[in-house]
Image 1 (cartoon, protein in one colour):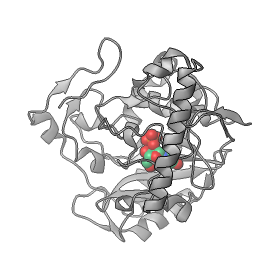
Image 2 (cartoon, rainbow, N blue to C red):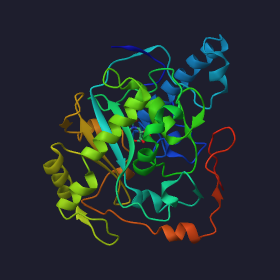
Image 3 (tube, protein in one colour):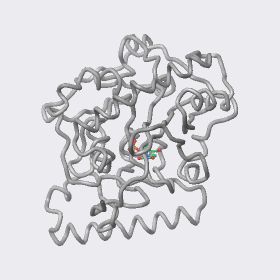
Image 4 (cartoon, rainbow, N blue to C red):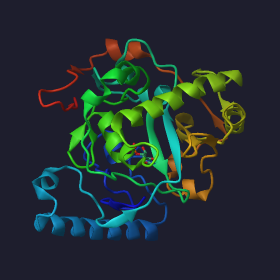
Length: 322
Ligand code: U2P
């Protein structure tokens, strides 16, 4: 089940700092495998440089063709074996936390809808390793929106991008949020998931089967701007309703993301909550003892002077406003 890996164990591949879209710079803004210690940071930088040099020698040798040379995504390691993943994480985002930072609106951004999103939405279905790392960009396949036609209403409803900017893709440059998730994570989901439609169907099925917003409501943990809940209560409520420990990521004390984990046969299991997970997470994303599930006011977005940009340009890519 091993595949040729064109990526880096340090996950610098989709970590450009030149865009405001977290999918391109790492949701934590500083890189997906951010390490607090300087020595580790330096090791990362050294490895990244080595990886990039390796890529560019291959590009120079013409092994990747011109497509990669033009791509804004520079694969950071070459020729590493990428073994089969250990478990899935269904990553969910909390719009109330993310949308309160929205400064620009566009049609694709779920934050810009006239009705506020009061439920978790899908970020992605991620194949992960038990050591806290993950494979990425496992196959050279391009995202094809046409394959998802039957799922489009569900994708719009449950899996909107919460940003306007386009996302980096593994090999073809930039595209919609869904393209990023399929190419980066979906292509690493074999032997459970092989194809694009299957990947998005599996994620939506899990999302609907295990409704986190409803699970929290059964423990009286509700959307509210002022209210704080004990982190332990939130975790216990999910554990009880779902049957496994979630991972919770915060931003300034508000839930930003919640992840449910699944075995390869899609049964609930514990997510990593040990140092293996926390070493990949910047300190600012750790949750305090009391956390909130805030909401946001979409009227602020629609009534403001924010520029609304068209959903897609002629070449199918999304643009920033600034
Ligand atoms: O956590 C920051 C970003 O790292 C990527 N990530 C995190 C955990 C994991 O198990 N797998 C993984 O890929 C996510 O990147 P994205 O899918 O957004 O590119 C996450 O946002």
